[in-house]
Length: 466
Image (cartoon, rainbow, N blue to C red; front, top):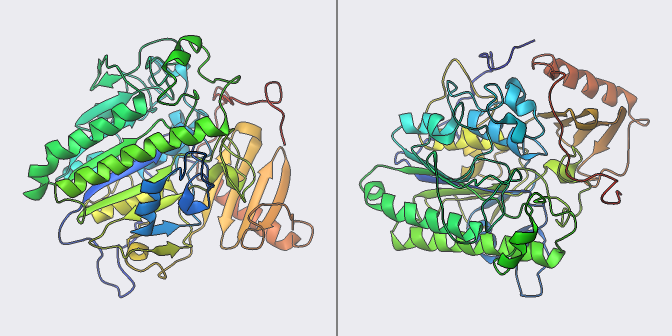
């Protein structure tokens, strides 16, 4: 049993391609890690999403997939936002850290010295900075509040965005009513729709870094949108903001049409970012990765998956993963490699020629061999647990072990991605073996403390359940 934040004995994976050669590129790529917020598995056109009344929802993200590599069996480290972000930053299972056991971090974390990302830990940006990168976070942090925590304390040299889990898109106020838009650690007053402000700042940062990048100083940008997270506001809904003070969860609003438009606003910004890279001659040597922090919420499309945010059924954890890197990744590829958030952070570190801290070896495994050859797959077992409803899950090959509310299930995901055909009674030996495998893994993680909070937004009291 481990205590929170201590080093572990995880084994480092050698970064090699299918021929056994090192995969770190001779030239360090610029890296942009784009994370959407609460995006469903099938919300994008390239994942089978339906068009909106105004046309395709995500043409620019779809173009990234067409020009790069799309993963169909990729996952988030958690079905809720801040725990996934802990894994993204540390390259490790989030359960090792006390703050990540909040589901998710909420306003009570303000002033708490244990509810955030410890500043002493090595992170993806700090490790890339040590490898020669400039580093910036533009968008959502959600890993604890100053003075104990913050982006500038955990490896980012530049920060523009929000500290909390969500804010109004126009007032930029959090659920508590406090203003939450920052430049570094200083409050920033700007007029505008938050998705657009984030996109504009990302484009501006690329242009500011372009000369240095062309001269051999690469940049790393974490571009973490709040879209399409509630409140349900499009670019044309500024008047709605006045009605949402203290009600950001917006349980009485929204629609599929509004939700699709919010995704489209983010997609437009990503299109502008790719145009900025092209204008600066940087697109070929920039690795762009796109994903979501967890599965979709109430208006999302997760087809054919069941469940959503807060659930360890597939709809809560299987998410889009797209990698675009013209210098290294062939266009039009599709991979069925199983992977999760921390694997991608490990991949980006390897792509940038960085080295993990030996005191905190990654739980993540580099996917660089797969980026080079989508057929170069490998076995990868994935584990999850949630305090909420006592959930646990293990994905091993085609099979998934799942526990919800004390009930154990067994599914063959290749045959039944919708998790409707429970094979527990038919294959009791497999169920028992996977249950024991999960338990052995869990014994290596700290237990969930009694004061850890669970904060679901949706309940049967405010929305009928399936």
